[in-house]
Image (tube, rainbow, N blue to C red; front, side, top):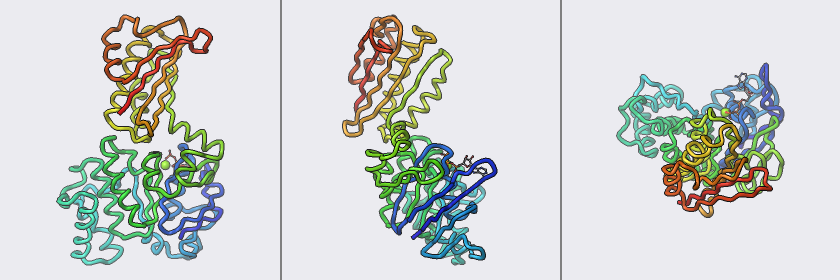
Length: 363
Ligand SMILES: Nc1ncnc2c1ncn2[C@@H]1O[C@H](COP(=O)(O)OP(=O)(O)OP(=O)(O)O)[C@@H](O)[C@H]1O
Ligand SMILES: [Mg+2]
């Protein structure tokens, strides 16, 4: 059991943790979510004392590990950390990466460290890769090695800081599968992640961080479906609904495409659906509307309904009545029409943005 009491971390220019209080029970699998800069990374780095808290206490099974004179190596042995950027040693083979700490710190024999390493590689789906170097592996494979390396120390608690956010979208699933498998084994885990469906599938609790602490704590259903507090609600809405306002020809469409990708990962949207969402966005907004509307703002709202497995994109804009079907970009209109299940245009002269195109994309 880990108990955080009035935990505080103050840097020169920021105090991300003002007063954090929580009880983390053995076997809890907790996802930590929240806006950028709210101290999610700081919190998990403080828990294993990679960062020294500037106030408060952390009790590990009743022992205050922040107390002066406490031998930190004891606590660190029980907690393993997985970073966003893998942090493997590039000059060592995969198996050497896995053997290093068990031999060095746990004083395991070479043979024992090797055998454990091989078994762990099999467990993360990388049997046969032991003599390769990290640079020969994909990002997803590197992260699975990093997880195996953490497991080689047999920690009681595993801390993961956005373990899939540096990965190519195609590799997110394989790493999530390994983490899901781990969660079932009863290890205590804290995972910083924004991937809602993943969090729902593996976590028993969610911490929403904001305002210098754990602002709201609940089950995934409570936090994702029925958040109680204002800032949580706002954040969850942003996870569920993607909105853009495009107001110039120089709009960063590449950035918008990346945002759509991120949104699709958070919502666990199938790659084929994602591809069609991007296609519809590019053809409709970039190819058909921006050239006609110029600087006039275009409002795009993308919302995914997991139960129906369908995405709805609503694109609204001002000005004269303009139905893209009547525009002169026939090729784009044809591509758009083919990539969506439903396409409709409406005009409401009384509305703030009288023109609206709605497309629906289903798995
Ligand atoms: N080593 C440091 N020195 C000074 N300030 C720091 C340090 N680490 C973090 N901070 C500051 O503390 C705040 C919280 O940072 P932290 O990385 O914990 O946020 P986060 O919630 O993990 O954000 P993100 O979602 O972007 O990863 C930020 O304002 C950051 O600039
Ligand atoms: Mg972070």
